[in-house]
Image 1 (spheres, rainbow, N blue to C red):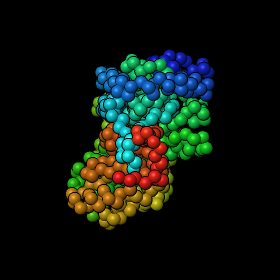
Image 2 (cartoon, rainbow, N blue to C red):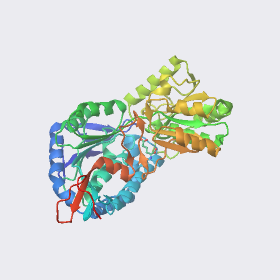
Image 3 (tube, rainbow, N blue to C red):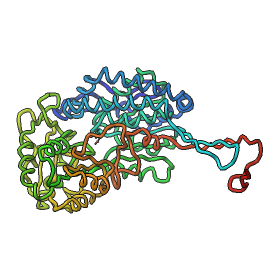
Image 4 (cartoon, rainbow, N blue to C red):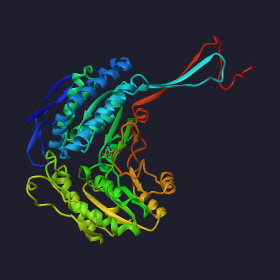
Amino acid sequence: MGEIQNYIGGRWVPASTGRTFEDLNPATGETVATVAASSSEDVDRAVRAARSAFEQWRKYPAPKRGEILYAVGQLLKERKEQIARLMTQEMGKVLLEARGDVQEGIDMAFYVAGEGRRLFGVTTPSEMPDKFQMAVRDPVGVVAAITPWNFPMAIPTWKLMPALVAGNTVVFKPASDTPATAAELVRIFEEAGLPEGVLNFVTGGGPEVGDALLHHPDVDIVSFTGSTETGARVVAETAGKNKKISLEMGGKNAIMVMEDADLDLAVEGIIWSAFGTTGQRCTAASRLIVHRDVEKPLVEKLLERTSRLRLGNGLDESTDVGPVINERQRRRIHEYTQIGVREGARLLVGGEIPTGDGLSRGYFYAPTLFADVRPGMRIAQEEIFGPVLSILSVGDLDEAIRVNNSTKYGLSSSIYTRDVNRAFRAMRDVTTGILYVNAGTIGAEVHLPFGGTRGTGNGHREGAVWTALDVFTEWKAIYVDYSGRLQRAQIDQFNP
Ligand code: UN1
């Protein structure tokens, strides 16, 4: 069992409160680590450290900033297995997926490292003679990175790495359910030679640490991934404070299966997207929109596969589905399945807290399928964030797309069809930020834009560095007049 402290100005220090909280293993209830329970005082110190490091860091040559990220990538690669095991212990996802989560961090590190030698700006000709002009990206200042527990490595790297390569400094607040993986990442940055104060790490609750970051006058950017409720709070608390806000929130992602689809292929994608990570991805499939001609055979296959899924501790390589993150989330999931039953959906399997061997001490929930779900039902509209799939049937592609697009979220969708015309129609008409053809709703790669429309976000995208940089930089337009005389734009006429 370890102890996790804050990392401020290049030093590991306990919380100013002297208090700690426990990081628990959701599969066993055992303590993984004790963690600093910080307050606004710790946040203030961290923000000051970040602010004073900014002046030097913004002038540190960008290719050299990128080289530090490259070293981070190498260290992550060396420690992949050890970090994955730690992640499974504190987060619960099965080892195979924990390795994937660390791999996503490695991919991000190597990808963004190269950005140190790009950070492209724009040049464009002037309307005047003897005048040069360009636009360059400037770092903004201090970034508050507030991250969720479902991807304890990947999501922090999506935020920290583009922010740092662009020359910002960072205060990183990890989710209180997964601070140990986050602390490993910070230690690796330290080992890789990141200068003091450039990355700071403060653990603790949302009301204490999160709110203090939102209110701090010296925080320039808040990059948040988490629940829609907390995202709304980020917006409310920062209103009128002139901070840049980037939000990545919920999803109600759907897989559409057309009557011409390869059903066996679709079943693989549905099981993986609905029950992988125990349904706790923002991109998890929580709706299946199926053409009624193939509903019966598809649902039979799904039922068969779902009832064979093995629940258990994610460290056991034979486990398919780990626990959910904590008791509060499990209660919420169970409330939703009861709502589904009350709304008149037909519970096909699951909907309960399982009682098998070795499951009693963890927060397990049985993979759940609901049929006869109508588009307006709460289980078809609200994010559940657990292993619950709602099945809706439709008569054609247009209806499938309409149902798909009709929720307040807009993150990920998928279509299974063998007809290229239908695939292209879906590509044109689906309004989510991510769309998969003949694959499930999960599996985004780091170098494409990640994010969603409507209530999923506020217009920003992570992942792809060029879109991430729109959050972490400001454009500066620069005009250089080398004519040696006054040239007045829009007024002086050019005479050849
Ligand atoms: C999330 O859904 O919370 O696309 C992040 C995926 C992963 C990242 C998911 N690469 O499923």
